Every structure is written in structure tokens, then in C-alpha cells.
Length: 136
Length: 136
DNA sequence: ATAATTCAGACAAATTCTATCCTGATTAAA
DNA sequence: TTTAATCAGGATAGAATTTGTCTGAATTAT
Ligand code: SF4
Ligand code: SF4
Image (tube, rainbow over all chains, first blue to last red; front, side, top):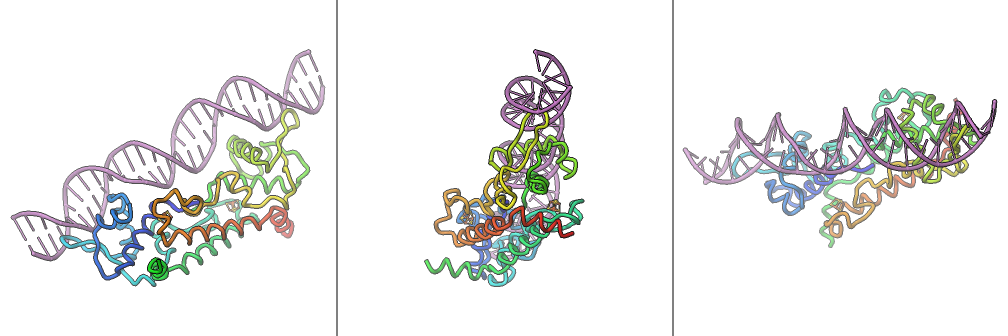
């Protein structure tokens, strides 16, 4: 039960952009400072753009910057943008995916755990994370 | 971020065995009543045996039964036996898996979330789950 | 126009998931 | 002692997902 590297890369990337939310940054620079394969990051940024977390600027002097303020972006936003819903178990996102769900005693456990994980991720925004890094 | 089907099957299986902890049950019967592919369940039961959750009995009238009481088996035990550690993110199980971990501000978040999920799963044992099913 | 940059999609290697099958070992019972 | 039932372990394999790469088209500042 792990997030993918892709998701971790996305988090690194948003972290990077959060450090100077006004600046437009290029894929190449982000990739190098955050140790992410460049062309892979390119794809990730497309997803982040589609889900409205970053904004893209094409052409010369183009690049990416946050679409909203760091405090308005949660870890959950980023994780869901890349990996889809944090399901924990498939039935927790849609009962109908399992024929046993109506009589299954474990089902409610997964549903509850899912909510819990989601809440924790939702309560963690990138403004807070950045503050932690400036304290070093 | 999901458990695998294999893990879900394992949980179903332990649930089944927990309903009559003294009885030795055959793969075929468990597979049929819990809707698990038989040969796959066979493999799963091998893992559960190796990790000491169930005991196997070979030969005629052989099969499987729980190695300890249902209240002494947690969801975490089963999940870990099949899927390995509940990592949430790779760095949460071993910092050294990521070169950035020493200066990463997200790392502690994953570590904490991991502990939290583990505790929830640890606090859920199969005796409690069975009680829920008998209340229907 | 030109150069720089993202966008979109096709492509593909590696890994993991989801099994199946076969042979051999073990055991209870006839 | 023979036989049938049952698990153990390993080989195999298709499907899905992960983890990327590459290329050409579109866009834009200069
Ligand atoms: S068996 Fe229960 S826990 Fe497993 S997928 Fe079905 S409903 Fe969910
Ligand atoms: S970048 Fe941070 S969160 Fe991601 S794997 Fe490395 S230490 Fe963990």
C-alpha cells in the first residue's frame, strides 16, 4: 500500500513551485534540482495542469507556476491528481466493485480508514510544509 | 494507494477460518464460499502459514485452521503477511531509499501517516470482526 | 522568422499483479 | 500396505501498472 514514485515526484515538484509561488519555472530546472527524470516530470506537470493545481505557459519564457496559493493546495489534492482516489481497498470507493460488500464486515473498516487517511492528507497544505523547510 | 486483491482474499480467508477456529478447513471449501480462485488461495495460504497465522495439515482430512485465537490476529498481521510493510511511501520504511530524505519536509508526514494506519489496523482483530457479523 | 518552450500522444521496458499447473511429499483411512 | 486426498513448492504466463522516452505540433518572446 504505497503511493507511486510518480506521486512522490509530483509532491516534490509542487514543493519546489511553492517556494516561489509567483515565478514561472521550466521543467528542466525543476527536474534537476528535485532529481526527477525530465520527460517524466513533463508528463506529471500535464496532469497537474489538467487538474488545476498548476498553470502552464507555452513558448519562450514559458514554464509552470502554481494556479493557486500554496496554502490552498493540500497533499490530498496532489495525490489524487496523480494517483486518483486514495482507495485503501477498491470497495471503499465503490461498494459495487465487490459482490460481497453488502454482507462484508471488513468493508466498513476500509471505508473508515480511507476517510481518515484522506482527512490527514487534506489537512496538510504546502504553505505549512514550506514553513518547515525555512526553519532549518 | 490500495491493498491488492491478494490481500483482500487473505482477509476473507482468515475471516472464514475465524468463524470456527477449531475446525480444519480445506482450500476448496474456503475458495468456494468466499469467492476466491482456488489455486491462488492455495498460494495465499502458504504465505499465511509461513508467517504463522494459520497452521496447515497435510494428507487426507487435511486443510488449514488458525494458528492462534481470532482475537490475537489483527488486520495488520494479515496485510503485512501478504503485502509486506504498509509503507505509504517508500521512504517511510527506510530513509535510505531516498537521497533527499535528510532535508525533505514531507518525509516526516509519511512516517507519521504510516504509523497511524498501522495502529488502526493493529487495533482491529478478527474476534471483533466476527462479532459484527453475528449481529446481523 | 527564429529559437525556446510546453502539449499531446505514441511507444516501450520493467515490474507487479493475478493467477494456473504440475510434480512431489505427506497423511488418514480402507 | 495401498490408495485417495490434500498441501508444498516451483515454473510458467497473461494482464495491468509503473516508469519512463521520444517525436512532432503548437505557442510565444524576441
Ligand atoms: S470482501 Fe469485503 S473488504 Fe473485500 S472487497 Fe469485498 S467488500 Fe471490500
Ligand atoms: S522526496 Fe521526501 S517524501 Fe519523497 S521519497 Fe524522498 S524523502 Fe520521501
